[in-house]
Length: 112
Image (cartoon, rainbow, N blue to C red; front, side, top):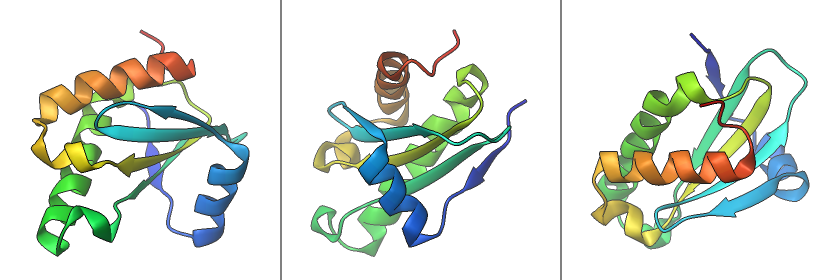
């Protein structure tokens, strides 16, 4: 089983935004860059434009769960920043997971 550790430092987010490649779907934007580690690192961001704290936390929860269910199929050695979009709040978790798999496949980091 993979271990994904959280990204928390602002400098890490900025590095991934500037050096990483972005892939867009209806519910989430994924920024990906290689990290030369034997682990994946994951950061999740939600803009205040999406709503209040309750809505933003819900968006983070469903994104985190969709990634958790997709994680066994993700290659190791990457940094990810997942950015919620306005449609994220209206989506079911399974729907978001399906989109996330498609986006990660386009990024070339999905093993199966």
